[in-house]
Image 1 (cartoon, rainbow, N blue to C red):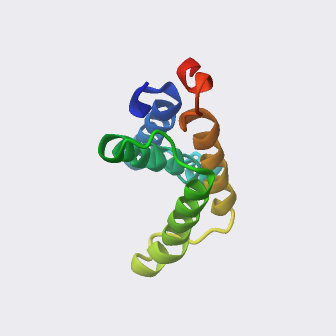
Image 2 (cartoon, one colour):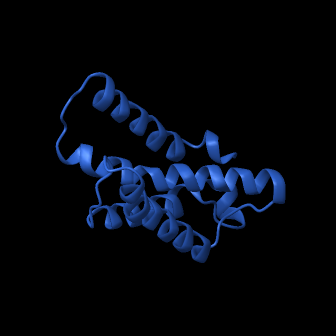
Image 3 (spheres, helix red, strand yellow):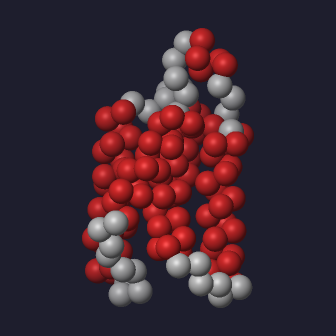
Amino acid sequence: MDILFKPAWWIPALLVSAHQLSQYVLHLDLGLIDDYLDPLLCIPILLGLWLTERRFFLRHHRLTGLEIVIATAVLAVVFEEGFPLWQPDFVRDWWDYPAYALGALWFWWFINPTTGAAARAR
């Protein structure tokens, strides 16, 4: 099954979209959800897009654990260290790092296909 058709990829994508709508259009204040939902869900979305690209161009069917760890670390540092330097509206928050890690686990367990018969059953 293609990555972008999996409910495990669409759930984070739809939640982020709904959250952006509630935050920037409806101007709702959702407390901790506003603080940590985007960091939690951006990793499964971005890694799902990356894996889709790799499947299309390179015929790779899954990301390795090392690729997931490195991509998550790089994205977390860019988002948490780089963006606040570039744009003062971005706020550096150390608690976002565990949210990125949980998002990587979501991708690993629910989106990144396993090999063999388990992959066909997913």
